[in-house]
Amino acid sequence: MIGVIDAGTTTIKLAVYDEDRLVALKKEPVVKHNPQPGWVEIDAEDLARKCLKFADIAIDEYNVEAIAITNQRATTVLWDGKTGKPIFNALGWQDMRANALAEEMNRNSTIRMARTAGMIARGVIKLLSTLRNKRRVKWLLTLSRLSIQPNHTSVKLCWMLRELGEKRERYDLKAGTVDSWIVYRLTGEHLTDYSNAAATGLYDSYYLRWSEPILEIVGADEEMLPKTMESDNVFGEYRNVPVTGVIADQSASLYALGCWERGDLKTTNGTGTFVDLNVGEEPEASPGGLLPLIAWKLKSEMRYMMEGMLFYSGSAVEKLKEIGIYDDVAKTSEMAFKSKNDDMLLIPSFTGLATPHYVSIPGLLYGISNAMMREDIVKALLESLAFRVAEIVDIMKKEFPVGLKRIRCDGETSSNDFFLQRIADVTGIPVERGAILSGTSFGAHLVAGRAIGKWKRDFCMPFSDVFERKEDTRAKYQKWKRLLNITMKIKL
Image (tube, rainbow, N blue to C red; front, top):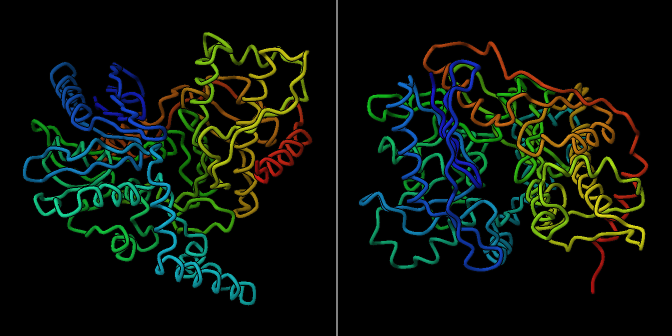
């Protein structure tokens, strides 16, 4: 059996698997603080304590052969190597306190020159298209859209280091994401895997190294950061049990859903929604704003992915519950199917739009009338989330014409039939729902099993349902896109 510590955005879980069978699942809440609007802090010491407790349970009660780790990405921890204690609360990936700092970093001359070099490369490619497949050219194309975002690890680390100021000399500073923090507390080693490193904004995924120019802008040095390892390497031991299968949550889901080859596509619908396309063994560039990331690096294989995201999807469904539109999110699918209103539209900008519109605009509800019902608002919300997914899928179709055969889904919000049906309706691509919605832990357990020799890549999770297009909603989608364009131009 294999125990997986899954450190998510709202919950820390221990999942124990016996091959494809879930034997046990235990949960603890992530302790968060919101000291100011837009600030999201996580009690890093509490998180580590709960993960150690779960590791003990996995060993003592289930006699596991390995402990795997999967985690929310980009959340940043800074700790003192002398004491092993965090210096600040961890800054969550949703934390937006560093907006002004991100803007300042984007004005840095190094970033501006990188963008200029990238724009020149884009012009050259128009004349010499044969250069497009060169890795260095793809790297330059990515630089043309280089933009440091406040949710990046790089910005959060810069904020922490500036807060420390001269006090930083007192510490043996160690910085990392949640995976490296858990690994450190379990094993004493300062390590991360490639999938987590690639999502920090500090790592060069094309050349597999920490980016010296970005580190200089941040004010950090490479000695502060963890060493990168293959996910199926052994990261150390905890109570004589190997710690392995360390992989970021979206990469773990991609793996769990059997999206192993170029052209395989999945969405994970949880707190946010992450749309990931496997682009194969070579990194790619996206003029349309997709993020080039490392899907996984194992001892025997390397896969890259392109990602688009919605910061607020499952959270948006929860928000409507908080304000009293319904008392149970499980009712939302049935409510949306009941609605006969085809005029109401919603722009779901609760904390910004993310891919490909990295702008902060207010959300908007259009089409209200004296005939509207609660069900209409629910339908408008779920459709808007499906339309946002369709926007990202459209970019992927245009930039990587690989012939998308299906969209595989996991995450708790994937339990919503109306949402998945609308994704199928608007994209025209069949949507398959994983039978195990927690694909993150299942994927980490598969990688850990490979690491200890239990299996090769022989199976993925089973699937419970397939949603085919029943209604062509592209016309409504185009109307929604026109409303989105108008919304982005509104200035009051």
